[in-house]
Length: 293
Ligand SMILES: Cc1cc2nc3c(=O)[nH]c(=O)nc-3n(C[C@H](O)[C@H](O)[C@H](O)COP(=O)(O)OP(=O)(O)OC[C@H]3O[C@@H](n4cnc5c(N)ncnc54)[C@H](O)[C@@H]3O)c2cc1C
Image (cartoon, rainbow, N blue to C red; front, side, top):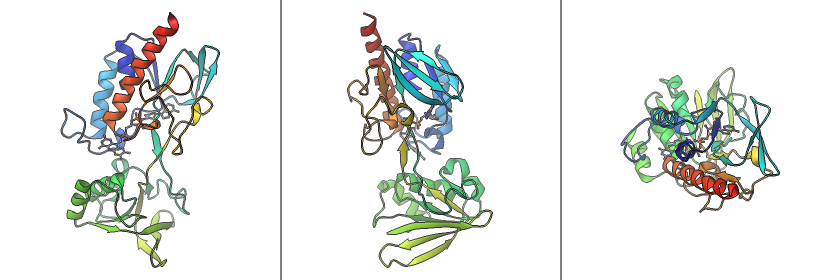
């Protein structure tokens, strides 16, 4: 969205294609680190971004997914779910990340039946229920705080012997009597009939297997970058992030830029992704000016 705003201000003939206007921001219940706004829900911040974007003359195709991008001589060919193809001289990829799957028995089977990757979306369904949160990083601890408004008991399970979340989040969760933190444990299986009824986990030290009676399992173990549709034109690092030149945001293919969580730039935050979007759009503008000459 920031790249779109900058492209419009430079009067580029730009089209923004997005599967949705939710992204990860929309999955965050509370954002407290967007400068100028002390506290805002992710969905409200998104509305502000969208409103700002729409005030410029940017063409927006919402609900359209890019399937493949190919390079053809001096042009890129973009295939989507909605249209056969678009042709363009330059592209900014900012497709972010998807949640990482746990890949244990029962996970896929119970998605939407107790297994979730988004507390902002699903917490209200767990009013008065017991839930497990897998992952003791920032996302897991934020999830526990979201769930605490509804659930009666929250078990946070972390694989390593210490939590990875920021100290201020850990303090907030510890003050909340509903949450219990289990360290050095590994989720093994999600069980149930029509809906989730329990989680099987192993204690890494004793190797003993235990069962937690829960109605929901929230999986918060990180994210996987979404760059498959551009795989023939970019290099990826070991985390699957698109490698870019940190000054220009260009990938290994001339005219193809990337920004936000899909790139190998460290620290995944809204303000950083937005800054990267601005940088990529400005570099893209310089690139187009150069090739026009
Ligand atoms: C639960 C949670 C809480 C968070 N809390 C905070 C916080 O408090 N503060 C903070 O600064 N950061 C927070 N973050 C991180 C922040 O949300 C991300 O760093 C930021 O959203 C990254 O922006 P992005 O545009 O790169 O990617 P995303 O937000 O992931 O957006 C990518 C967009 O691309 C679209 N897309 C993907 N593939 C395609 C395709 N093939 N075709 C078309 N469109 C596609 C997606 O639908 C999506 O709209 C949080 C993240 C999560 C998950």
